[in-house]
Amino acid sequence: MSSDLESEPKRGGALGRLTAVMGSVRSTFERRQRLRQCLIKAGAENLPDYELLQVMLFTSNPHTDVESLVGELLDRFGSLAEVMSADTEALAAAGLSLAAIAGVKFVREVALRFLRADLHQRPVVGSWNKLIDYCSAQLAYSKVEEFHILFLDRKNALIKDERQQRGTIDHTPVYTREVIKRTLELGASALILVHNHPSGDSAPSAADIAVTRDIIKAAAPLGIMVHDHLIIGRGGHTSLRDLGLLRREAESTGIIPVRPYSPVKPSFMTTIRKIE
Image (cartoon, rainbow, N blue to C red):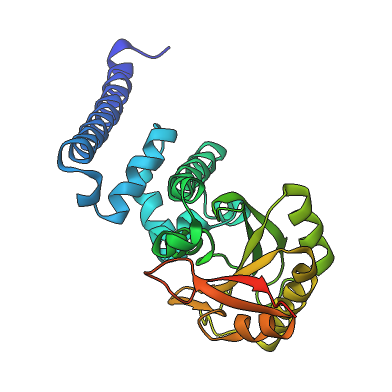
């Protein structure tokens, strides 16, 4: 039989471990409280990216060592924007739990809806900078090509933004018939085409120009305008309208520009059919 004296060190060791754990928990709690206070009192804009990411993750994962996890995420993906744009599989492979992944997806969608709200309320073509901000937030850091369509009503306010296709790192298929079909289903009067180049270079390819031409030609007889095709890269964007490519195609279909939509961006044009 063991004596009471022999078991005393074991009890002392367990107590020491418990004290150390409690001290660590208290330290973590106090650090997180300070971050919350900084976010609320000083403003979220004053927190660096890694602290914003910490707040987001410990809110959805209160028992996780988010400090170490945040460092690993930023090393792996490169930036807060890329963490927020990563797909579910990539986030899971980086060690995020289901709750953490849901938190990332939730915050990203709230941000996108905030950016999109203005586009529903006023003419998109008169809110150029907001449109670019929205498209960039949505697509600039995607690892594969995505083709989106912004469907607009007669006043050029946003009806809906839909992803039509998701492809590979350098290609996504676009089907003109499906674009026109969906436009008619939504009762849209105009379109803005948007896709990204994961390479970061926003220069249009021959295929990008050909797809734009095909959609303009199919839409024109139905009175559907294609205002622009935006290509989003990490370092910027390219507008096929600004390159003069949309005007050329519009003229070839018997459509001519008559006046700008916005005095700020006079190259956005309304169009009418030529009167013979």
